[in-house]
Image: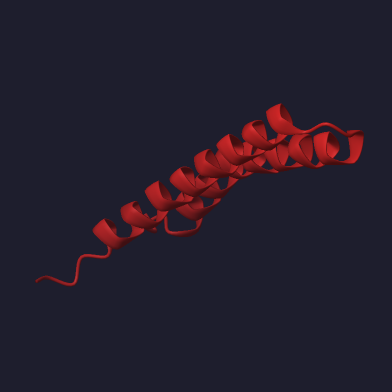
Length: 69
């Protein structure tokens, strides 16, 4: 196997997106099953954090690993 770092980096970005997606799903399920407002607030916070993670972390990783020109 060659020393090309592209595949593990791509897998890390995909894993980050999947973790964020599962977090958002968890938040939506928690929000749907909640009966009191603190639990609903927790569900909203989890969904917001997961969406923020999906939007920012893969881009930050790609920027960090960008090949110098």
